[in-house]
Structure formats: C-alpha cells, structure tokens
Image 1 (cartoon, helix red, strand yellow):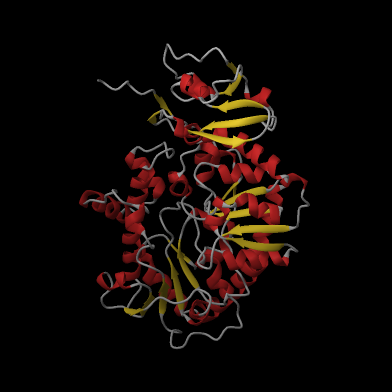
Image 2: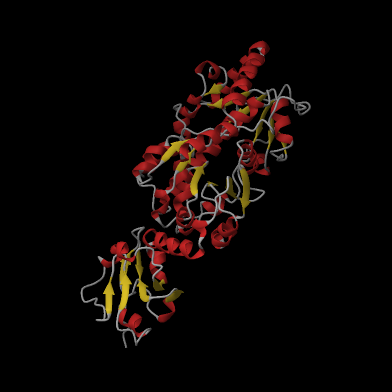
Length: 493
C-alpha cells in the first residue's frame, strides 16, 4: 500500500519541511479550563481523538502555516478557531501543543509560550535587582572586563553557564530577576528564540554584542527572532546590512581596553625592546569545523594576491561583491564567502610578517612554522598575564585586522597603547574613531609599507615616546570597557 503523501510547508526560514503526524507530537502543557490546541498538525481528526468526550475544542494556528495548507484540509466540527488576540495570555486554557509547530515557526509560538510560562511561574511579581547576567564561562570573550566594568557602575553581576540559561531559565529567574542580560555573540541564547522571549516577557532587558562577523554568528539561527534583539556590533559596516535583513535596533560599539589588565606600571617583557612583535594565532580554534564544506582554491588565492598587489585588502565586503552574495541570512552560504575572506586574511598576515624584517618575534601557535621558518617563533602566551608585559616591552607591536570585519578593530588597537607600548596597525575605516593626527605614523595600508614605517619610528625615538603617551591618555580616558558600559546603558534606555 502506498503511504499517503505528507503535507509539506515552508518554515519561517523558507525551507521546505514535512508536518509530522502522530499522537507523540502533541504535548499536554497543563492548565485548567477549556482545551486549546496550539496547532493541529496534518491530521486534525487525530487531535480530536485525544479528547473524544469534548463537545468543543479550541485551536490556534500560525497564519504562515494556515496559508500553506492544501485544499481539502478540514477540521472536525467540534473545533473552534480563535486568534492569538482572542486567546490573551492562554492562562485560562488547558494547553495542548503540537510540538513541531514550535520548531517550524518559533517566532510565532515562542512569544506566546513564554508569556504562558512566565505567568504561571509568577516571575513578574518578583522584585528586580540591579544585576547584570553575562552568559559564559572562564574561557568566554570579554567576561572579566565586562564584569569589572559593570561592578564599577554599581551593578552586581552574575556569570550564567550558557547551557543552564537555555535549559533552566525559569528556575534562574525565580531566584534572581536581573535588570539586564548582556550576551556576547548570542552566547546563552538558543537558536529558536525561547530564551530571548522568556527574558523579555519577564521584563528583563537583553542586548547582544557581536564582536565577530555578525552574519557568521547568526548563520546557525533558524528563527528570525534575532531581528527583535537589540544588537551592538564592533564593525559599523554591518549596520545597514543587518537592517536590510530585518534587524530593528543596531548600533556601533567598538572594542575597548581594561586598564586593570593593561597598564603602564607593568614590568616590560625582557629583550624585546629592539624587536617587532606579533602576538596571534595562524587560525582560530575550531576553524575547520566552522567552515566545513567551504573551499578556497588556487583561483581564489590568485584573486586575493592580485587584490593585495593592487593595494586592496580582500576583505568580507570585497569577497561578497566578487561572489555576488547580497543575501547573508538565512542559511550558511555566507560562510563560504567568509572562508575566502578568512583565508585572504591569513595571506595578508603572512605577507605583513614577512615584511617585518629580521628582528621579528611571533608569539603564537605552531601553524606559523610553515610560513615563517626564519622568524623567532615562541609559544602562545596568556592574555591576562604575559601579554600586557609583552606589549609594554616590545619595540613595535604589529596588528593585522581580520578581513572578516571590513571596518573592524582588534583588542590590540586599544590594549597595546594602554600599556605604554607602540602599535603599528593595518588601516581600516574603523580607525576613524581616533584622531587623524595620531594615526599618521601608526598605520600601514599595504604590507610593503611596513619596513619604511618601522624604520621611521625606530629612528625617531622622541616622536615614538610622544605618540605612545598621547595614545595611552586617549585609550584610558575614552576607550575603556567602563566607557563602553555607559554606551550600553544609554542604548537600552
């Protein structure tokens, strides 16, 4: 016997999926009152059989799904449809959820389910504390800096393990109702939006600060809920692109420095005063897994090298134009373009380091050995201990910005100066946050300019000293994480 053809619909990410059928796909969420189905699935008669004695059964359906149901799809007579507005907060019903619907159209169902969960838990009646939650662990980006900065502004802070936040949020909120959740790169938020909508329903303000390529970060998100999240980006190039893709509130917030870690009272790392130093990896951890299935062939390499020869940095913007990619979400196609930008960045770093002269010291992973066989290569160093003294002791520190961020900056653009060191950075439009007169001697636009730039600085020690002093005063006054917390608090008001 031929199996009946399943109903297929496009989910909210425009991907075709079947509507699963069976009793196991209906979940009783409890409650008292009339029975309300949240979605009926492909066979409403099966849903009706779950309550054979009921004379009236109510149901609500996602409009995006309803408009795709085939001709002949009918509901048994005892079903009465109600709209989302009519249902209110759902607390007056016994709720039966068709669970696949939540996965297919999370932006429709998650806000309603979150409202129900928060109401039942009585969380809104709790007193709010001046607390910020930061999802992360001991290895998370910016965690110590943000915690210290919030504490300086009178906040208590709580570091929430990301899995616990996704899986046990109601219990966490029942014990402590914070004023704000600050997530770095969507850490602690799930891909469907359940965590975000539950926090919002509880009256908690949520901000996501994306410190990497934003479209790489959201490429794994299936729901368009991210468009509702207030977003901060370290690279202003992405603001119009994110708005084009539906983001409702986006603002630029660059990285910064923490003077408690990087300061002029450090003991300089020994025997680096005459050397040009670079501290960084040849590739980021889990790179192969993230870019699985992406390619960078010989023609791509030639194109990247040709661009650099023409004084063009082949960054994400350049590759997106070359690839003809103007839709960055939904889907993972953006990673293919991103991989080409990432590999171009490796070429850019290699050429820059090869032009740094014979007094080059590199602190990084073993991947550099194949590219820089004659350099003074040393193992990776700890960010919070050895790195500040290396910046303070180096004759010149080099910075090469990832092409994944066309107008981005790195931590080096702030940290090196704060230690009293000297930074020579590749130029990006993101440097426009600094005074032009400070940039003149401290930036290069092509790797070939590095020898001239380094020779000039080394031969003008007084100028170098004055620039370091002026940069240090600037970063410690206007570009600390405490400054950024002020921006964040203004952003949420």
